[in-house]
Amino acid sequence: MRKDWFALIKKPEVKSLTAMSYSYMHVLIKEGRFPAQVKNGRSSYWVYGEIIEWIENLRKERDSSS
Image (cartoon, rainbow, N blue to C red; front, top):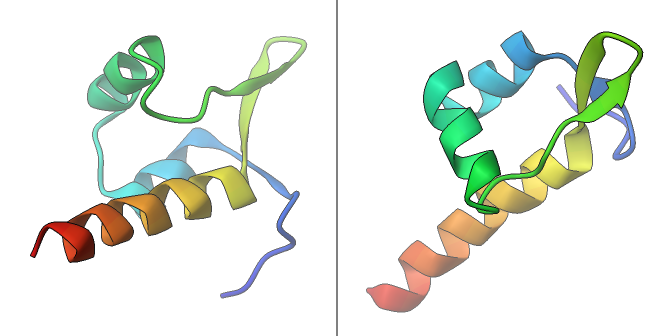
């Protein structure tokens, strides 16, 4: 399913795309190793394209080390 690169997505979709637990996701955010959420009032969203870039960078790291 292709989305607009700048679409805002909620936490369950981020979890689905990354297969990470919420707690690990927040650890990586605090360490600066995962895209931070965008706040809108009390709601949090992530930018779809930033998540896809993060996944792509993991793949590149994997491929360059093998």
